[in-house]
Length: 367
Image (cartoon, rainbow, N blue to C red):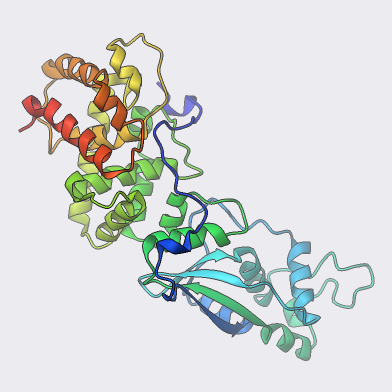
């Protein structure tokens, strides 16, 4: 089967956090966003030195036309105040651009003489000019234009940072995983990207997890979190924080440990595919028939099955595959198990219950 032949689909049992920031959830006196004023020249210098993440892997490439970039430069020449910019402070001292990527990229390109001003009107005095071709006073006016940066503090609570990140972005709405990918960019996020591109993952999931919104990486992030931290450490009912903690730990891991986790993940994908075929991670497993209609991928089934079927946790040979398949069919027909993969799936009790029930069901096959 070609994993790319099936279209992406909705995910069952996936809970999304509210996009509304509830200030009552956070200490009101905590400073989570601070403002700084810098010149365009200072900001471009920091971009060129690598201090700004201008490609945070959001699937939102630079798309402004030259005409639109030129209008921004014209605004600087005319001393028109610019809207604020939002960036998120990262642990390593860099900042990820939350809102303003197009404008900052426009400044960078124009000051580097990479395009001429266009679309300003037939007789406009700046039409067709590069930065180096402008009069010195206008070059300095652009360079000295002040921009206001609102900086999301790296010490703000993770949930607060994600909520603020989601609220202020004025472009295409970002998924929580896209935001995590920017905030925790490093070895961990690169590991997720590598696994999302792995053929065994694509085949096991039927290519049904949307890569553009990083739904595929979110599922893999869940595996990593439960594999590294264990379900018993999930005590706050906060999946955002749990996934973030996994990325923080992965960013500190050496290559050997990441490689071991890679082997476990790929091994789990192979085992799930070999035993359950097209029904892997789906409630249609309960039918115990390869000819049953395939249901939507269930994200809670993915986090528990991907974790429990990792080779380091499960001792299986081909002769046991049919017995495991029957065991899973029985479990999927259990009302309590169905409940904890269907409702309030990120709450502490359902998470603990489904992982414990899965572990109990597979105890005869574990080492």
